[in-house]
Length: 237
Image (tube, rainbow, N blue to C red):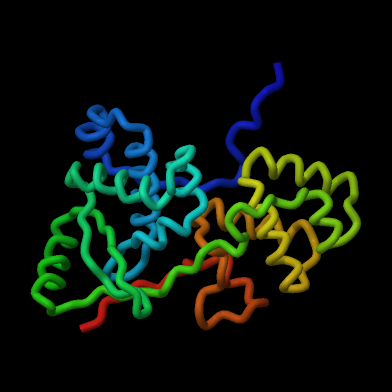
């Protein structure tokens, strides 16, 4: 029997509140609710700034979240809304209406005392949560993914046996569309080598991946775009 690849040598860890593990999770019987809750903890605990929040559109544009809750013959948006409602009913997450780059959206925060004070200020109109508009994946819905080996040769260069082995190993760890999009990113930045592609994939695995776009104020060739957070959330008075 072939041994499964196991955990990668280089990886990051996500925080999960003990309260959730010990008090809430034993009563969760819906796998979609469980998976979405874990994703929310990962996303929210890695946010920077005073207002650490994610949004409905950000979650909807995250391919890992979408793949985790996807159901056959049902719109993902509908499933996400329903699952979020179940998560909210547990009292571990709180929600607020926000404006994302001119578009109405819903923000989700951990239900902590400090965030409750923040929510009170928002509800009184003293503060307003804002953030960047979240883009969707570059791959059109329903478009078949190209073969990663051919795609590498077309966009990067000669496929050596060593690189072919690296791609095979990457397939065991990363979603196929991540590999395709990382190859595209490398080609667009004229960084045609596997090491650069691998760094992109490792950063997405560590920090999470949404639309793969660059953080504002960084040039396309600036390596800092893969070593810093992608979204800037802030509070406006």
